Image 1 (tube, each protein chain N blue to C red):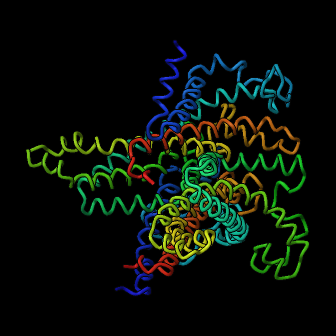
Image 2: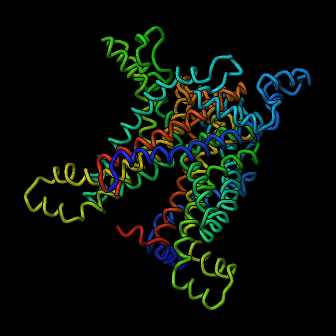
Image 3: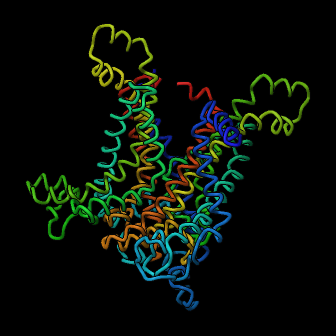
Length: 336
Length: 285
């Protein structure tokens, strides 16, 4: 039987072709398809000399194969290229905004997970009841909600009508905590800055609730489906026969086993989460990687756009490996 | 008598697996089909011309109010059905036209081709679809065809995966072996024996994909990557309306969004119903 270490190693090696394919795909989309980035950057009125100059600067005058390998070689050294707009390294610009995205995604995932877990378990125990039917409907409706529309409805209700929460931004001006990790909640806690903590929590609430609700439907279905399977097994009957309380049977014995397939799905959920985050960030003017991407598309800064897409690709690959490792760690059956 | 006829029809529809989902989804979709076909007759005003004061709240004259340019929100919402459905159908069909044949070849032939194709498709599948569509749409520029293409790209792997897996499991079934033993050629086996067993799954994904495509299209145009203005488009109208949200012009965002929700709901309910009816073993829980 292979050890955990060799499993992890194989998983890492398997990741390489996947990343390479994604990087090639990104290259094809952004470098081969658009025709002439020089005229895209300069606009239709640019002179041929200006275009030639830009092309030389970007290395576009060289053969496409050469460009491809210098792009891959650069990435290998951690060089994501330089922004055409600010002339700064794209990776630096992305990493500045990444904590904001991370904060939003963590909290959305947390909300989705808690909602999905609780509603899924409760539905599975009342199978076929009106509670179960209502939340099956909830899962379908929630999936159909455009995250940006739900965000606007929350802005109208909680921001404009009731005035409970700010409708945009990450924190009020001049309230930023000292920079340690870039995660405002964590930084303000570390520096014991309660005012900043509450202020950023207030800003975080509506965006993460919006994204969390939209994602909760998928979790609900997964948890419910797996719980139904597990609740049929003999060990559940045995636990009940031993007189263990129903809540303990559900949340301790059954949920533990039903959760493994849910965690396996987390990798795919993560892709959904990143896409949703772009829309949520735009809706709430959240200064993360998503708003950065959209802003740079408007400026036609394709170096930055390419950098962001590559960054997302690496992130997705990394998360899928981490998820697999967690699964292998908690469930030895995964490794065979 | 007529009433009883409808009653019996409803009963028949609701009976059986997934009946309720199929019926409700079907009703919603027919509603949108009517809007799609008769948009010019249903919309009371020209959707791209100012017809009243700016920011009129909903009234008898403008049942969903007017936007910042004094255009009728109701007329824009009705006309928006055309863009939404056109792009959703074009994108989905395009994805199916590429993904299904590739899945067939890959699953039927197997070998190196199958392994390479599966690896490529799995890689694309693992990437966040919306972000991929954003990148492609940004490069291709605005326009109905371009948006459809960028949305289609992200669904190709879905068709590929499902069709490939089904074909590779069906091809070793006894009845296919029997057909081969009787001397049927590859083409006959593929079209007559395998395609028939894969078709229900394709229909289910088609419907689910349409739901997703409506959302993706709305997302792209919300981000400013959709059909160019002044085309009536729900996603674009939402981003336009959001600028006036602090002034509480709720009608500019509420109604276009509601349409997106309804149309998506229609497709996904319909897809769920089809799934329950055609793939009963999956739903026996």
